[in-house]
Image 1 (cartoon, rainbow, N blue to C red):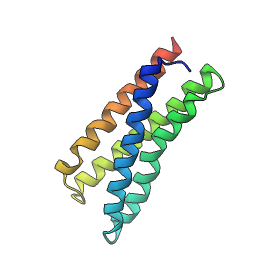
Image 2 (image 1 turned 45 degrees about the vertical axis):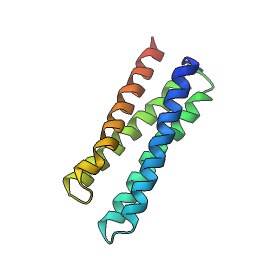
Image 3 (image 1 turned 135 degrees about the vertical axis):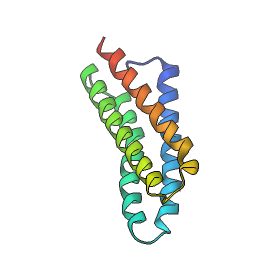
Length: 121
C-alpha cells in the first residue's frame, strides 16, 4: 500500500523465506530434549510472526494501520534475534550454524525500521 511494488515484494519474500528457515531450525530443536523445545516454541512464534505482520501491513486499512503492523513485525524481528542469540550463547546450536539467520534477522530489523520511518514522513 505505501511501498513500491518491488520493495513490497522483496520484504514479503524475505520474511516468508526467513519463516521457512526458522521452521526448519525449530524442527531440529524439537528433536532435542529439555530446554531446546521451549526455546523452539518461542522462536517459532516470533520468527513466523514477522512475515504474518508484513502480510497484514500490505492490507492495512490506513497509513497508521500500515505503520502499526510493520512496527509489530519489527518487534517480532527483535525478539527472534534475541532467541537466536540465546541459542548461540548457550551452545544449543553453534553460532556458526546460526550466523546467516542472525544476519538476516538483523537486516530485517533494519529494513522494517526504514519502512516505518519513511512511512511516517
